[in-house]
Length: 254
Image (cartoon, rainbow, N blue to C red; front, side):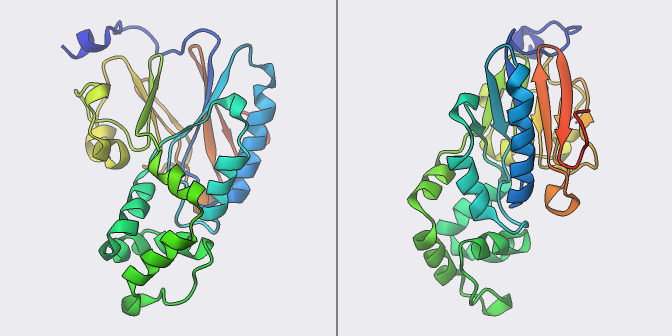
């Protein structure tokens, strides 16, 4: 049944439609400096593309690193529309959005780096420890965030499909068709996804689960290389049946 749903030959290698090139960017986590560097390399790399190029950002733009607000500004204003950018929602954007309406989530969000997002919007007082007034912080953050940032956060997609590739922040639940995936899984899944060995002939490109180097398997590609602490922001370049990777700090495309 799983193979009939997707009509993929078991022996086929996952591929994109002819002439399409996709750049999939891993977890940024507030590292505007690395995003600028990687985007410049993508821009130059795309010069020899024979057809349209798309950049798929896999989510987790915010938290942990120093400039989450700057990252959102960059994504909104400096990514060339010719790349038809796709912005997916990560679990950190999920927590951020929920915190705005449910301040009681503050301790959880702050513990995973959310405090750095708040600081990036110029809010620095009253953030410490048990004394933090999360309701007040949520109100100040809602008021401080530009309208375009609110719209960006509310407009994020949960997954993207192109050819035999599925793009999702965390992954997909095995044996569930792509169009029936639970958004919670797409943003948060880990163990059940990582332990699976096939997805009906599809290949899932994901972040969320940190790796030291990009993981390139027939059924999944992992590109969260821990940019916020490692200095390596990684992009998978997909075209036809080929795969390659670009990472900040590398002298050349691998």
